[in-house]
Image (cartoon, rainbow, N blue to C red; front, side, top):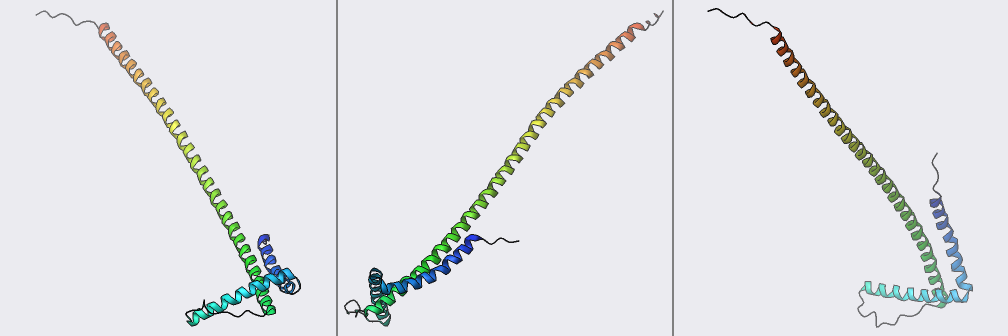
Length: 181
């Protein structure tokens, strides 16, 4: 069974809830004086910027010298509240997307760190095995050297014993008779 990631559901819920909040912002802009003032200022500024952009796209050269007529207050408030509502929705969407990206990025970094740690531990185990094998090889070489020395000593003793036996056998054999001639 696949678990539903709660942070994604929470992000969707947050994005869904911002639309009614933006709608409420638009309605409150008509009744609350401080919000009305902010929305009117934003609406007027947006109108001025929009007209200037439109004039520059039409190729009018001296758009800075032309006086732009202000919007009526109710239209400026509507335009400003619309802009602020859309900015709120967009901002929440960007924040949720950034949070999801950041969380995913951290998760992938943690996975990478764990993989690196496992690889490091595996390399450590291989290194320890290699050192153990080197140690065992050195002790085996020492044992082989000791065994070779024992074999050489035994061979030397055997050769000495054979030589002593041959000497004893030669001394034990009677000497040949002297010749008369």
